[in-house]
Image (tube, rainbow, N blue to C red; front, side, top):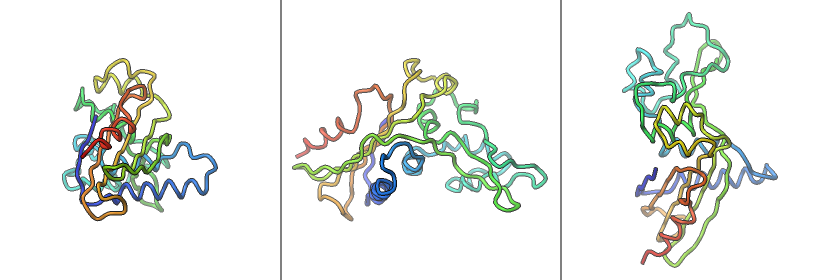
Length: 219
């Protein structure tokens, strides 16, 4: 899966770069962290509306898109809420099958966790830990490029592969996510930048280096 998007500002990418630099100062070896998935999920791999409707029950989900963290706060006040109660995983929702977008979202953000804040239930998105494999800023003759590459820690559940009708070859494979941000003017910039965001199997030939080499050939 590949998203190509032109944005007026690379703020999200710059925030991710700052997060990585902060983590490197506190962690001797920067490995798995759910924060990386949060950046991708909040920018590109968004929850499908049908899934939000499924977990919201009788609540009008169209008014809650973009407010997913509070989605299940509308549960019955008499219902007991566990400290870490998980709502249905995306691959447990039967409404949509054979959808690659659902699959790749589910491997970054499987669903929601219900928690208690004081006496009231609250809901938070659950982000999967991903391993940072590349974080680099490159300058080329065509401009400057930010590259971020992540891999899931675990391979996807067989049920997710079957539910979304993904290729059987994904069994036992980690998932690679990448984000390439291209700024002809260089960084920092207030000018539009080009974002290339992809998801594929970790054994795929598609990676940040490939996309970066294509961008570097721009004239």
